[in-house]
Amino acid sequence: MTRIHTPKTQSPLAHKKASPSVLSEAEYLKKILTAKVYDVAKESNLEVGKNLSLRLKNTVLLKREDQQPVFSFKLRGAYNKMAHLSKAQLKKGVICASAGNHAQGVALGAAKLGCTATIVMPLTTPQVKVEAVKALGGHVVLFGESYSDAHQHALTLEAQKGLTFVHPFDDPDVIAGQGTIAMEILRQHPGPIDAIFVAIGGGGLIAGVANYIKAVRPEIKVIGVQMNDSTAMMSSVQAGERLTLSDVGLFSDGTAVKLVGQETFRINQNLVDEYMTVDTDEVCAAIKDIFIDTRSIVEPAGALSVAAIKKYTALHKSKGQTFAAILCGANMNFDRLRFVAERAEVGEHREALFAVTIPEERGSFKRFCELLGSLPSFGASPSPRQVTEFNYRMSDASVAHVFVGLTTTQAGESKKIAKHMTQHGFKALDLTHDELAKEHIRHMVGGSSALAQNERLLRFVFPERPGALMKFLSCMKPNWNISLFHYRNQGADYGRILVGLQVPASDDAAFNRFLKVLGYPHTEETQNPVYRLFLKT
Image 1 (tube, rainbow, N blue to C red):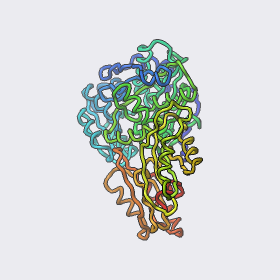
Image 2 (image 1 turned 90 degrees about the vertical axis):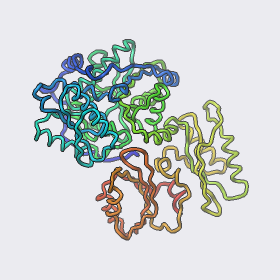
Image 3 (image 1 turned 30 degrees about the horizontal axis):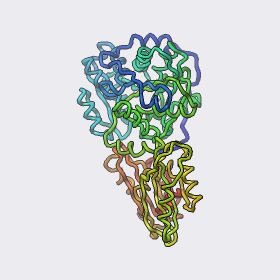
Image 4 (image 1 turned 90 degrees about the horizontal axis):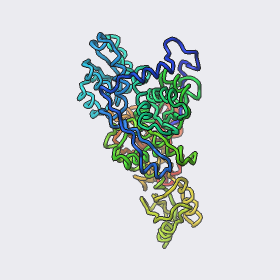
């Protein structure tokens, strides 16, 4: 789900003269060359993605950071930071705040160095991640409902107990540790590389990579990749100062950062050549592409770079070039695979979705099926077009609305199919890129009701924790009736909820206050044409 917000400005960090505390590029190069990472990390493989390369007509190199002991690059920077601490600091112990890969990196590094590691994690952290950190010897403290709460509590414990805080990205030693990935890439592939694509969360990984690449092979482009709903770094660089996003998308939780680091921002401003965004469907398709080439399943953040290469080659029509993608992590919850598999088809342009209106008259259904069987290829390689989904329920004496999924072979084909069906007497609405259709409507077609007057339809993102629904119900006015409620667990730390509420027009102001107090990310869909076709009388 894409949410657009007006960012809040933080303290500006526009181009300034380097202060004594700011490291030069030469100093970063030295730090990377002397980084202490290989006590815990391995030199991960750099493999050619054979199927990807063949399909894209460019050589795609996959840097396999999913092969690390904690299935992520994060242990490089975390360990390098801890390995540079004094004996006195190590004796007191280290602390960090994380609900994911950084937590495991710190825990493993601490175990190797023989020091204690306190990991502060939000109360909402899935148990599987908590147990993974404990298994590595980390002492887990659960606190707060968000990463921000956990981070603040970690700083409090740091001051109280004299611990050393290990930042997930905004620290020169952490940045240098991540930069060893670039050092390995150039050693493993001394030949030409046109660009390296790097996922960005807080910016530690790309800061390390950019420092090394621009010092050793400045002709290689460094391209940063972000989710289209988590663009903290790109927005900050464009504005010339760090910006805090009021909300970020949660699908790629490994890159869901609202505010990038001061040092990582400075480095990105100066050294990163270009930025790109990708969406959820494109990332799901990239996860599948990586699986086909490696038989490994990366997490969403780990697939951002491949999704961007696919987009980049299509945009620039490049051929015969060499691109490197850093697969930065593979800590994927198994239950999320259902969602990834479902959305990958659309992301690969292999499925299109439509709402089609057909007359309720004898023979019309047969004519529509015949039209589906004779749809042209629109310039793509001719192949049998299959129906992937078909939902129908009678709702009117004169017309029927059906939800149809069809196989496709190239981008942009869905619009041509919709136009073709409309020209042949079956009015079609292209739903291929409609979030409401893909997340909910396809699973609940036929739910219109004459009783649902004054209905407002909203999509919410609920935190997956006890009491989330009760909070929603408690904030509602007693005279508002729930007329529709749809929930589908996607195996993530949050749930996608579709709710219909009967709210009198006179209560509009009260309803807006309710949404503000509730505080859950939401999108109103009352005017969405899909809702009006399938759910509204």
